[in-house]
Amino acid sequence: MDTFAASAHDPYDARPWIKSYPQGVPADILETDYSTLVDIFNKSIVDFAELPAFESMGARQSYANFGRAAKNIAAWLQQQGLNKGDRIGIMSPNVLAYPSILFGALISGAVVVNINPLYTPDELVHQANDAEIKYLFVFENFAHTAQAAWRRMNISRAIIIRAGDLMGARGIVVNFISRFIKRGAPPYHLRNSLSLAQVIHQGTLTPLSPVEIDRDDIAFLQYTGGTTGVAKGAVLLHRNVAANVAQSWAWLRSRLEHTGPHKMVTALPLYHIFGLTACCLLLVHIGGCCLLIANPRDLKSFSTTLRKARFTLFSGVNTLYAALADYPEINKVDFTNLLFSVSGGMATQKIVAHKWKTLTGCSIIEGYGLSETSPILTTNRLDIKEFTGAIGYPQPSTYLSIRTPTGDIAPIGEPGELVAKGPQVMPGYWRRADETHKVMTEDGYFRTGDIAIMAPDGLFRIVDRLKDMILVSGFNVYPNEVEEVLSQHPKVREVAVIGVPYEHSGEAPIAFIVARDASLTIAELGIFAHAHLTAYKIPRHYQFREALPKSNVGKILRRELKEEFIACKVSLPAPEQETSLNIDVTI
Image (cartoon, rainbow, N blue to C red; front, side, top):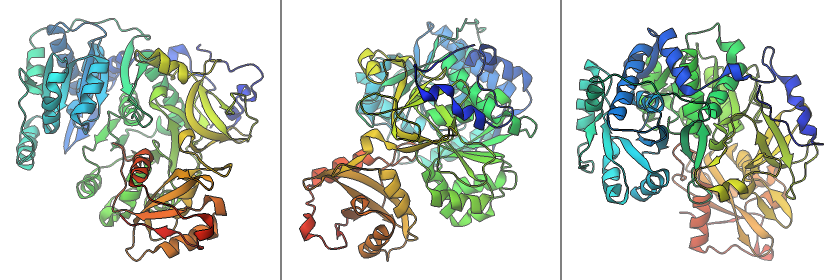
């Protein structure tokens, strides 16, 4: 059994959370509970051969067909002279071809590098060169980005993915419609590129040679979002990710094992670690079906898809749940088969969770993790009656601890930086020993950069990001707390809070507001804030926005707002010049 003991004299070493585990959930997973992602694939395509594995745009793909396509892709890669450990890039939204490419690369012995298809050419160049990608599978709509970056990358060949790939006869219709929609899109011409259809056909011409994959082989270079600097590749071994799948299944098994078959609404992109593990890999492990949503921002199309589907599981982030709950046509969707909804990636707001519970009858089960942890570290119990606002209890075989700014162990109940150990934690960043050293404690814990508190029963709650915390005259102000309060105003749709330099108190909170009702005024916000927040937590300044900048999974980018605000050089009033309400600058 893998053992990840905490440091000496650490009260968290006793793992008080185990007493709060649901019945049947083990304290630890064993080595026999997981092996490699290739082993998961090989078992599932046999055990669940006739069951649907993935569904997209009205087309379904069985496990047998999914496995066949993946093996053909792997065989083609071998034909090209691929060596074990070579990196393969996938730059695509959630379309039916994605999982077959993903597993085709893995069973060939390659390392998968997931790439956000919305990247600019410069961002693509950085990631491709840093990972030394050999082959790039790119969705046709974004091939112009690859072309703009091509001469600055050392990629051997590009393979073009189309929306209808692997859909059979239906794919012809999908590709025809897709071609019509793309009129006016930037043109591209990637020299020596192939279509995925050509790759799969050529892969049938020679048999696949089995590759010995070890638990300690690299499965993914999962690049961080780069919110704190240049994006780094988290090295995720087969055993890291397979262990996280086993941990998740240990937590969910009693609820799901005898209630299948399961279909999960997969609106989270598979190139993001949350969607990759919690949706794709977990569902493949249990023989479930992923309902792939290519563009969740198209709420009309999304809700139409949901109306036609019988789904049992739902995954999303706060902004997605908020948008769906507010969409007028969402009440036409049948949620009666929904067992639970999971949320991660960013803090879920209480008002959003309440709306979702009212709509669906199911509470949102919030979890927590990072790219560096494969990603899941904690999850709430599935039997909660109402949203807790906490991130839940650590997964089996997971050790968490809370550390003070000096590195000491914080008393239980006191806030500090959350640090983690477990089989799902990465060994380090790709070729960045310096960055790896920065995020590891002397006793071998990974530093998450999040401030958390643990209750006596082992329930963890995130207070905020360490780097986002605002220091006002020596008092800590957590943006999440202020955002949670302001989001409860009935005329507020979205809110983001940042801290900016302020000569009178060191820093000051600033709020960016997307209004639900155009009649919302600064006066209303000021009165509401004064009624619910202590004085030093109240924003010194408000800005109205049409929209807030977001990451690929809908996480609000506070750093971008802060850089823009500081660049505008807006002057904040001195304390003696302030009234009871704040001054408004509207953009």
